[in-house]
Amino acid sequence: MADKTMQYGLEWFDIPEAADNKSGSDYMLKKDSAKSISTADGITEHIFIEGDNYPAMKCLLTGWRGKISLMYTDPPYNTGSSTFTYRDSRFLKHMPDGTHTAQNDPVRHSMWLSFMQRRLSLAHDLLAENGCIFISISDDEYCRLRLLCDSIFGENNYVNDFMYLHGKGKKDKWSRTMEQHTVCYAKNKKQLAEFASVEKTGWAKTNVDNDERGPWFSGSISFTERRSNQNHHNYFSITSPSGKKWTRQWLCGQEELEKLIAENRIYWGPAPECSSVPRKKIFNGEDSPVIPRNIIECADSTREAQKYLDNVLCVKNAFANPKPVNLIAYLLTMTQTGSDAVILDFFAGSGTTLDAVLRMNKRDGGTRKCILIQSAESASGSSFHTIADIAYERVKRIMTGYTEGSGKTVKGFGGSLAYYRLTENC
Image 1 (tube, rainbow, N blue to C red):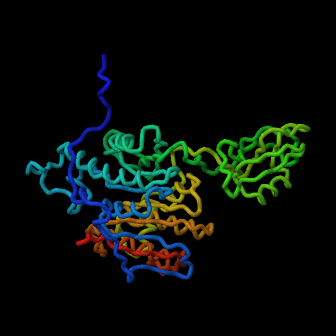
Image 2: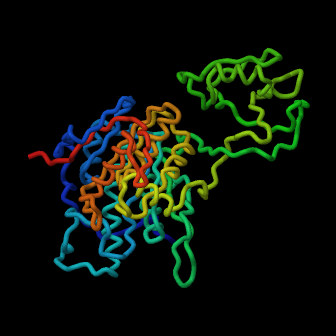
Image 3: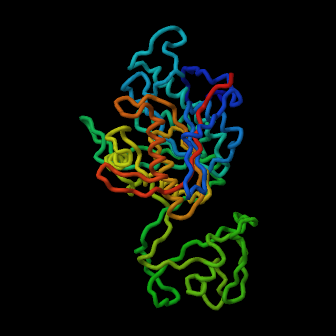
């Protein structure tokens, strides 16, 4: 008979870090006014923190605990190409017993798990109850990441692995890997909004009310009474042609819904009763929200993302393998995150996440706020000194405008940036 005290999960050799026994009050985010940016369109002030993301996230807990709507992060993949690919002084140069760690020593997984466990635990505390996190990862640590996230976020809060097809793939003698994983977990899946993507319809076959516009199918236009938020601005009443009143939270505003009613775009159920829950009529050839597939095919390839970044910075290969801007934009759109959402990327890399947020705000007039954290990790082989310098220069150019190497002038998207450096209190 199995021992009921036995637990299933990961075990690893914990590698300590200098910030373990310190709180956010032991650190300070010091504003660098010289690097902060303000533009004429700077309605929303974004935040850039230069420093180690572990103590930086501890600092953020003071004002942002439970307030982050969505996180995207692209951590080190621990591919085995070196003892640990994320090099900085946090990690012990020797193991606690004084020995060195060989490249092929399994303890490298313990180093990575120790590193990630600290940061993901803080991410969990920063997320809003209805928020979620996306984590890009390769096969090297995928299985361990899943188990680690199960222990931190809860197995029931796993959403899916949204796999991004990134180009020609990585090959060996036996196969070519075409996808990169993007693992998604909710803080509380019961409060997470439904995800949706948009596709052109072409599958409508019926026309139960003989609408002259042709075949249609119906889509949801409201929450149920039980799930409706009575304090939401889209909570109001409408009346069917037969006089039945429906009061609930709708997926659009009252003015838009009344326009749909006037255009005979709402189906109330068979006449004369017209007593069914109101639904929106969607005709072939129209955009329609659908449940997203977990294979993302609409994003640029790694090569295209690299070319774009090179053009923005006017420097070739300053940062290797950046994520495509439209990948991050797709994730933000798919989650139906509000236009006033707060987005955190605590492994900012080249700054793709803020680039995507700036573009989305410009397109729809949103006030999404983005927080980036990036250490001053050396940018070896680059004209930039650090990775943080690369991300900052990219963000500055996207906000204020820039000229590509070809001479083409690109107008800035606006926005403002508060630049902070993480320092330790004396």
